[in-house]
Image 1 (cartoon, rainbow, N blue to C red):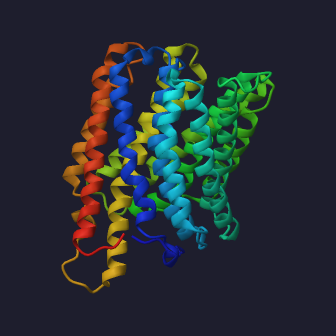
Image 2 (cartoon, helix red, strand yellow):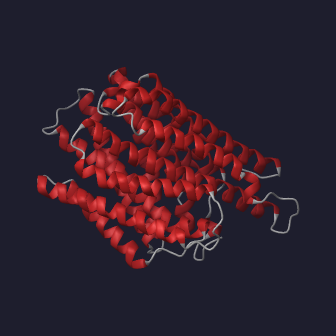
Image 3 (cartoon, rainbow, N blue to C red):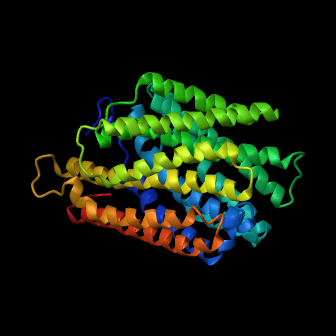
Length: 414
């Protein structure tokens, strides 16, 4: 299962990524409960409450998991440790833990202080993380996975810079000549760049390793890197026709990636039932639908559906699938390293997170999607959908906590 070429001796302490993974479900649960509390957001995600929910999901849940994944994967894949990984991971975690609720409160109408405080907290924690991750990349090997991570980090920096500028505008500190242009860069950098391209790069490593598929062909990964980078840059330019072309290139790259991933999963060596595989298939199908729908989204409802397909159908599904595999693998790996490969009575990966527990959470997630995807057209469905999403998040948090407890019970040190 351990792929060749990985520098496992560079792996950070288990606590560095685990803190992100254990905290993330809290924000997903909060997103679900608030979505059920005020279902009118689903008719137009650009209303203040819709923006607050979007950032709870993207920063609080997805951001947490992605920073945790980078903390774990960058040193191992690059072969170069992140400088001060404990301190940097702690700062990044604290920034998201405190800054995300402040930002959601400010966007929902909580006032200028909440917006400015959120910006200060997020910048104070994310900038050191970006710096340390960049140093690790500069010292690392020249691999397509690392190039994708570098592109994703650059997109995160752009999303953060534009986000801080927009917060200053909302707080009355300055008046941009064209706020829509800043918003366009912020949204595309955050969604297509940070979330989309990072999942792309992580998939190239974890899908073959954890799902026992053939590797992604180098020609494909190079094409996707060039297409994603060029499409992202073009979508930021002033000319409307160039922006549209850039978005179409991004949509094409997304569809090619999804189809290729589904094809590789059909060729996996062990064709047995796997909950993580179900999450990935759901995610890839949602990505194809989102990419196909986005160019046609000419109303708030269609735009909302495309956004829900991308964020909940694709990103949240894939992240759930990754957590089902990565947390048990890390617990097994660190316990084997601490106790010795020949120690008896140690749990297997399946013992940390049984299939039945993951399958129960998958059913809740699927039911939540079934309610939330039509919610832009029938907002009342956001009530059961939000409650089911919260239930799925609570089950995810319970599953991951049980895995951590089992690790500790067998003498594991975080």
